[in-house]
View 1 (tube, rainbow, N blue to C red):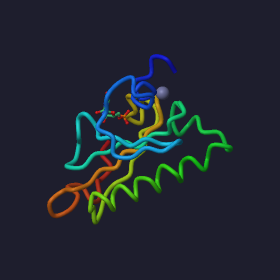
View 2: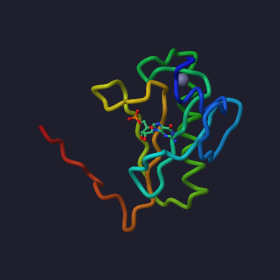
View 3: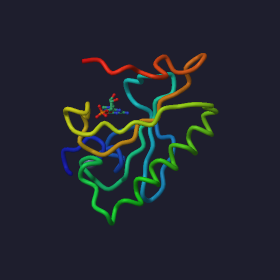
View 4: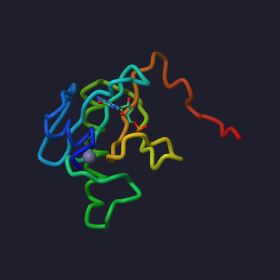
Length: 118
Ligand code: 5GP
Ligand code: ZN
């Protein structure tokens, strides 16, 4: 998509702090990190969100998760969170599918078991 910020990053039309890239996926550091280590892993192909995945593209999701695991290893994260925000009500702001890798907190995650709040 021409006006998609993550498509522009994946085509190097905008800069990013790249952690990993191959022909299918790109990983780069979040510009406003919510954890000491905050990396976004995206498919190079534009897909709006997890809700828009077609069955033929399902293997891409395991590729994103596997890439996150490899980055967690190279970043020496012993524990971490993997998060997909889906749609506005799910907290998604950028409409290009991305997996958040969050970690690196001293002594572990601040909200290991976050309670549901009304
Ligand atoms: P979402 O809320 O859509 O799941 O998360 C989007 C994430 O993208 C946010 O954490 C935000 O900080 C990050 N982000 C937005 N624009 C840019 C950008 O231009 N570069 C980078 N590296 N991250 C961005
Ligand atoms: Zn895009």
